[in-house]
Length: 262
Ligand SMILES: [Zn+2]
Image 1 (cartoon, rainbow, N blue to C red):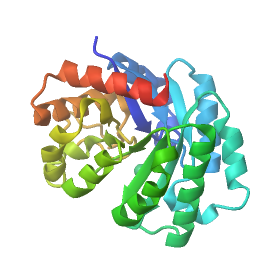
Image 2: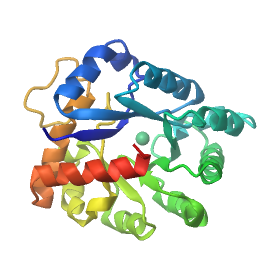
Image 3: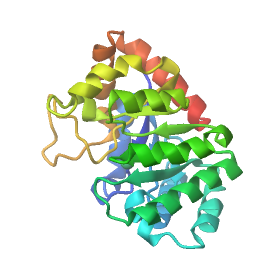
């Protein structure tokens, strides 16, 4: 059976965590054997680590502070994250980056939290799980300062322009693609771009419970996205890359195993 790794799922979200046994079982039955739980705040990263302890065969996680929570960033945050990321189940620093679309946190706080998490990743020699929305210019300018010393970085849920994609690839970033590509209204540009992502830089994610693929044949009534739908996203990517699904899946699996050391 074809195997998959979902590199970004917010399993700590209450719509998923309350039903986690079943969510993981459905994922497993769909071939999604491993899931990287996204840590988006200190508290959330703690919870992600706890979940990994409960499902060690299926889960690993990231530890970080999402730009939406950058307003909570304090002097102690780096040390706390460092301690959390010492856990073997923590395979990347993040989710970190810049989100000037929503601006839930002040931009200077976002920049500070982003810089310090990049520095932490360098210190710990861990890869970075990053988020960028409507902030490409500032995001990549800062990244350029650190890129040389970073092991690896994935720009998760990539939905930006062709020019942005090529700038990320020039910096040897990995690219995470979600079910955004399955959206016939918003995903058309992305659909044209996936063929430019090298096999060894492409990874796939659901970003559950968000971004339920719009063209899913049987949508769940609660509209909650979950890792079991990852193969559907891979099918879309394969279609737009004009490659066999199994090939795309195998390449994504290998790339994800290398990126997260699993
Ligand atoms: Zn994100």
